[in-house]
Length: 490
Image (cartoon, rainbow, N blue to C red):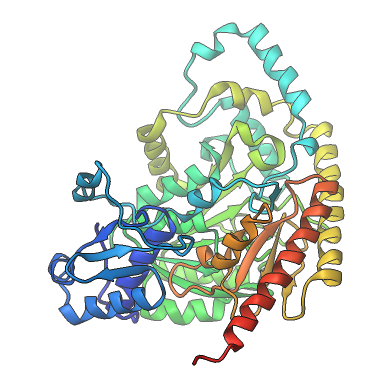
């Protein structure tokens, strides 16, 4: 188990060790019953004092993450396990093989399925142009039967990049086809940027909370992640400026438009201030834009990329979510040598994205069909958002609050402070409910009483039934938790 610590941070070393182990537990990288290194062994491995490791282990034990057995050692104990059983496995030897995965929480939650799916920020398949894309793929295969035996360009299909240049121009982003890279979804775009520009000890700034899969990627590169809080106007750029005076970041990762998980929108003024900071710091901005087409009341402000003449912004645009998640088409736009280095990284990764899926979505872009499709999506998703918020207002217990987004597909809920939504998720599974616990969205100091729910994946009937069940589960769990905390200890 490799634990990276940063002695230059204001976070105590014991807290960094604690967080590193919790991240691995919550990512299922450490199984229930798995042994941890002894205090002496771990202190020697990461070159810290015995007392520092003792403090970290004491906190882990107090929070129920580990159990100590006299004369045998220290073992992982997961919250969902009712009783601890020391695990014995023929694969125990594998624990001696070090890995460099400090965290993989998002993929863990992806593996949970349930009748009421509030976790997935994807759109109901019934709202997507599946039949059209099926016919388009059949047409392509009939006209170009050798396409399945042909590699595409590393940078992406030239015709698609030409069309995307026009599509981005409609968003006021001036970007030539030669400055566009097709990726296997925006997640690969995040990974390409991280593996190209981020290494051990580099400073990455993110919003807090933020997209958990981005945290996973940056942590896997050994980055030190510094969080900046979010309010109703997006990232607190005033706090970012103060942070940058002390630590020089290499990258700022942001979702300024319908931010995940909160749904907030960064104001135009803050966008300009963020670009000024990047210019002063000579650092990169990674702008992740999955949902700007899905606005309900008014169009969001222009993207950071459209306001950036100096090449600080690397722009990621996901098309899979609003067209076909199975196609995994993402767009990366950048300028100068930054872009050329990212193309090289893409070549090292997979030699280019599948050609068939690129050709399949090509006729849709910049077409009337596409414009009508997006308009219908806005109407359908606004109806579902309103249904969810109306039912929450009627049925959620007191002490629960939420942010009503002006676009995108997610709601960010705050439960009473005494509620841990990781525990609530275990309880909710008995009601066939899944969601994303808020703790997964924080890189350092987690806030455990938040959760993210999506209103986009289930159809309207399922969504209504699911929201009612979620409210019943929340009421029951909050009442039980509150009663337990009020019970006097004798």
